[in-house]
Each structure stands twice: as structure tokens, then as C-alpha cells.
Length: 375
Picture 1 (tube, rainbow, N blue to C red):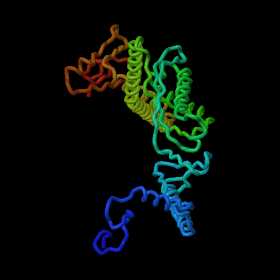
Picture 2 (spheres, helix red, strand yellow):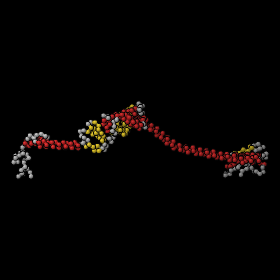
Picture 3 (cartoon, rainbow, N blue to C red):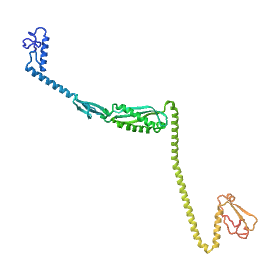
Picture 4 (tube, rainbow, N blue to C red):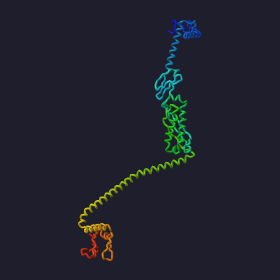
């Protein structure tokens, strides 16, 4: 039942009697201020009471509990998977936490999250003097990430700026020890590798908590004023390498052919050697078998050997000169003409011992030549 309904005996919350007229706001303000003073242990409008003091103590405890609850809930925080949390207690390093949900006492501890998976890119560029006193425009790209959050936050004031200075210093050192040809042609990879090694050597004593992941030599060229001349030099060097490559290709093709030809010649020589040796051994064996017959009839055997030898010699010659004993002229036998007039016929010349009779005196031979016959 509402307080202003008929028959309701409840008092007016605004302190009015008979529920008529506007509420007395000043009286209500004094009443509320008195209650608030009682909550905090003061005296009420009527001089305070023991019940008001107890109510003030209970209210203060409730406020303290609520404040403690809010403080406790505000201490929860989350560290992402790619981050690490560096906890500071009263401004000093306390611990490093990994990913997940953590709690810290608010206003006592403070957490700084650091992304350890993010790859940062920096570059070092400028005109630099090479070892052969040429000026080159070089640009080096560096990629790195944070490996130790504590060292990254506290060892160096500005680790990223330090990395830029280290990259430029290492690049100038390496370029100063390299020639212009190394920068423009085949030595670029060596310049990149040496630059990375120098950067690691220089930055290690600083303990920045950074680790270099990749170094790339992005630009290496001559100044624009002399770029055309360097392009011509590079083209000539490329032509030289192309000619050398073609020569090596031709050499690789010709070497097997030459080796095969040499092997064939060696095999033919070995076969010829074996043939000559076998023929010589056969001749020796023939003479060994002929020796007993020669010992039995030396004169007959000697003449027979002579006749066989002359037959072999004259059968390979197309011209034969015959000296007729007792004659004044030397006979000439044109065997090549004789062979040409009778195709397919190969004459065989037999030589007999010279006698004192004229060649035509032999009735058994119709050949006008000395002891020669065609078969």
C-alpha cells in the first residue's frame, strides 16, 4: 500500500504532516547529513548515539570490502601468445611471465608486455668508398626480433636505434674492404655474409636482447654519373663468362670423342703388334722346320728360298726388268699393261735360275721372255 493512500498510517517520507503542502527539503538535507555523519562515526543531529556508531563501523567495513574486491579484480591481466610479460615491483625487475592469464597486486606491481615474435625491418644506406677508391651507393636491409625482453627493456636506452647504427657501421667496414667489382657482380653474396657477421660481432657486447634473422644487400650500384661505364664493364664481363661457358661446353663434348679415337688407335696398334709378333713367330717356326731340309740339301734349299722370295717381290711389282745373259739389250716387261688388256687375269711370274741358253731356245716355252710364264 502506498504511503499516500487513504487509511495508510505510514509517515510521509518527506516529513510532512497530513500529507499536505510541499516537502521540507532543508529538513530532509539535515536529516541525511546526520545519518551520513553517523555512518563515519560522527554524531547525528541529536548528538549521536551508540547505535549510530555501530552503523558507521559496519558501513566503513562494507566500503573496505568492496574496495578490496575491486582492487583484486583489477589485478588480472592477459599476456598474448606472441608476447612476454616483464613484471616490475616497485620499479625494479621482478620476473618474466609467458602467455596466459596472470594476476598482480595493483599499485605494487606493473607489467610491460613485449612482442617477441614480431620481425622488425631496418635499413642502412649511403654512398661509401670501396677498397679500390670507387664510390658506391649501397643499401642494406636488416630484419631482427626480440629474443630477451629484459635485456631489450633495460640494457640499452634505444635498442632499435642502436641496431641502425650497428648496421651502418658494419656495412661501411665491409664495403671499405671490398672492391667495386665485388659489389656489382659475383661478390654481392660475400658482402652480405660478411656484413651479417660484423653486425653480430659489434652488437654482442651491448646485450640488447635482439637477434638478427636476415640480412639482404638490396642496392649496390655506381653513382649515376658513371653508371653507363660500369654497365659496359659488367656487360663485357658477362660476355667473357658466356664465352668461357661455351668453350667448356665444347670441351666437354670433344673430350669423349678424342678419348674414343685415342682408345681406338691404341687398340689398333696393339692388334698390329700382335699380328706382327705372330707373323714373326710363324716365320721363325717355318725356318726352324726348314733347317733340317737345308742341312740335307743346302744348294737346293738355297735356290728354292731365292726363287720364292723373288716370286713374292715380282708379284707385287707392275714392271720387271730382265737382264738376258749374253744379250746386248735389257728386256722390259710391262706387266701393268698386260694385266690391263686381260681383265680379271692376274699373272704369276716364276723365275728360274739363269742359264747360258737364250730365253727363246727352250722348246718347252713359247714365251719370248726368260723362263717366265703366265698361268
